Length: 615
Image (cartoon, rainbow, N blue to C red; front, side, top):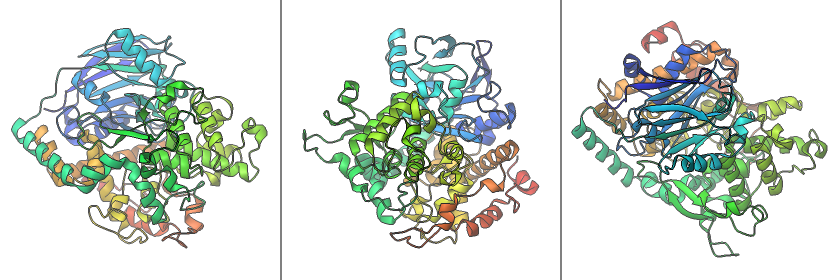
């Protein structure tokens, strides 16, 4: 139960759609979504395949809890070999698309090959067909979603699509659903565009059954009570969203600023949650209008925002006067502190462009930061930028490049390479603040030591959603650890990584773990799914998934040399804040981590470990 037990396989080359049964033996080992789709991907593609080759596959996957009444059970993931990184990619999204896909009767949709012309997939309660997308090609995610709904006369359709950035090969293009929710990192939208697949539109009303309904309802009710009573999930996130972290992390001295040259941003308060809620002098209205929730979510951390009508970015763009998805912490950091821009209207506008044209604001903002540093040291000139004064703190440069990058035009096409390729192109590879080609999110690893190890070992490149040690090191969840110490961080990171793999694979949102432990999560999985899903078996599945992802990357050509950080974080000490004088202690933590994982000193899972985790 809980699983739909059915996969839709779409051969884009031949234009065919076929149902097949889910491999339940694999489901019992890998649970669903991230874990199960990774198993399918690793079995079906060569790890060395070019991410943009027709031989790469892209999988949209739900978890067994997706579409149920469990809190936050609306997630789905896109799994492929990432265009940005060349590593295993699993990008998670909320909104309502995942629920619709599961209720249409599918655990996963596997896309293979490449269509000879632009197409979109229409799925309606187990019926599927590929349709001509010529009229949508060259248009935005917003236009595509609205137009497909209008064409089929069904506003209840849920649409996931790519914008022009995905069509034109921006390396960090994403897949946007429900207008402002996204499978956002690693270039999954770039892979989708390489297949000439513009969108997936789904309508489902079949329903989801669970193994033991009474037991499940009891476990779900207990879980929701824990979320409601917790200060973070019951109060902080609904009121302030993830942006509540901006001033907190800045005061901690771990807010990467101006391409990680600094660890504190003097303009942080101007782009914070508090600033979003402050009435504007011009019209008395705040940037933040209200909060919003994804399917089944009792937390409601989403933001709905609008821009000041007479701000320079929107004077000639009336469509941006309406409310849309507002700033979340990672986007506000990347578009703000990473570039030195503290104009909240400019950040909101750039974020809208990211949603409209479908590209990752984290990689975009971080790449802008690297380009700004190269501009200021003379490596890049106005002749190359098309006249753009690409200086730290320049809001107009940020918004201009957002529009250019969204369409892969002008210097925006260069930004669309991502920071690794951009910095290599201009002879300054050391200025790319990335791991395995993916840019850092909003935590400096000199001020939060566990995040340095998290970034270095993340299977999809630098990522906070693979091991959010910030919860422990800053917020004291589940217990407080010292952010400036390296001792014990190897075990902490490993525990977070394995638990996160379970949450992602179940179909739940990682934000639940601010309140839930595996003691809250496992009973919900166990009641919904047949088989043994105790805390111990769930964590064993998480460890198995992590090792499977690692094995894929090793087979793709990554080595222990890729488990590192830029020299800036290893050699240049933080200049201010509590971490002043500190560098990342990765050299001490990494060998301890390999040992804790049961890997060799070269970072390769030993045969004993592979046997123990049943790989």
